Length: 269
Image (cartoon, rainbow, N blue to C red; front, side, top):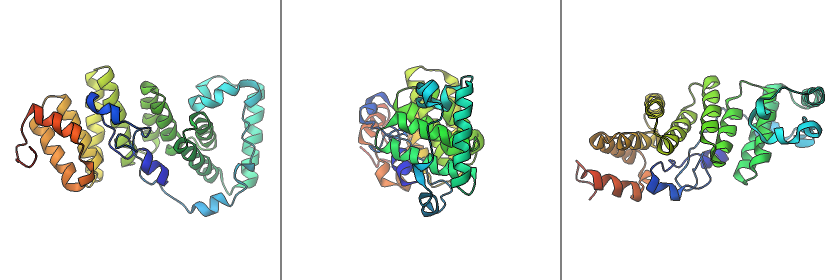
């Protein structure tokens, strides 16, 4: 999904002085270079899905009884009323008639969720991701999308929780891993808890282990070590990121790093 590539691609500018550049991508902030970006997930031919009666399928899950729940991750994780259960059964039956399988229907609704994220309709995006989750609670994209929405609403703890759920069912998704680390770094900046930075570093190390060409992950590792005041290591990861992708260079962050320690390689001054 190209939208997600945009949405979470740019390395979320994680330092306070960079946060101003943070656009709406996440995930976070991908568009301005400040976000987290999902890589293309197992992308099946979207033609096959879009040929389905699209949103002709009723999406009014629990709307009459608890409309607000639609705009909360996982429908607010609240006990369901009889009306909600009936509405969900009706929705699932609609999908069973219109899609080849529930996982396919789940992919369709998560794709729509990303479309709404891209257009800034976050509550509608949440509803679509919720429907995707209802259809297949092992669809990592559903949790990923909810995490992105929460991030963009500045609900960082909730974003982390959703992204962790996504990684639990898609544990080799490097982009999701990198996004989760990015949000954990951001949360660490807001509320310094050592465990957050340690966990973020672990995700990033695993991400570069799975994909040694992951420039955003190396850039974020540079930030992790900047926050640890290990500037030599920060420079090492900065150079690795830069060697993989010249566009990863952020002048603001570079100047901050230079203020802490001159470039050991003398490339940047």
